[in-house]
Length: 137
Image 1: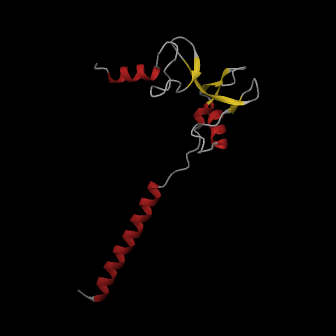
Image 2 (image 1 turned 135 degrees about the vertical axis):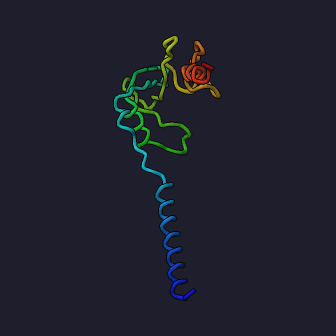
Image 3 (image 1 turned 180 degrees about the vertical axis):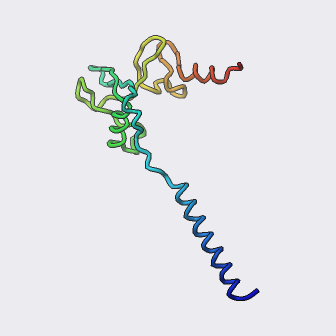
């Protein structure tokens, strides 16, 4: 084979390698997540940890995640507390309302269990949904 033909083949292989490397880089790099716009209409429960207050109310998921994103401190190990609209302290955390007994409690109250396990009646919507999904038809 002629020397110039070998050079063209090698150059072609190098170009293909660079294009492949670029494509892999673009496809596997982390994307800017952002908060879905649908969260603007989805409500979530929050509860104040201040024993003198213990307010519980709903805010949009967008409000919650925007606050967490803005005030996040990775060294804390948990989401930053929001400012309570009743007592004004940084003491509000994400909560869940039990669909069985109506108790509003912080998510993950029972360690090592479903995040929505009610400490009062022991109901978990997540557990119920998973059992339904895996139940034989």
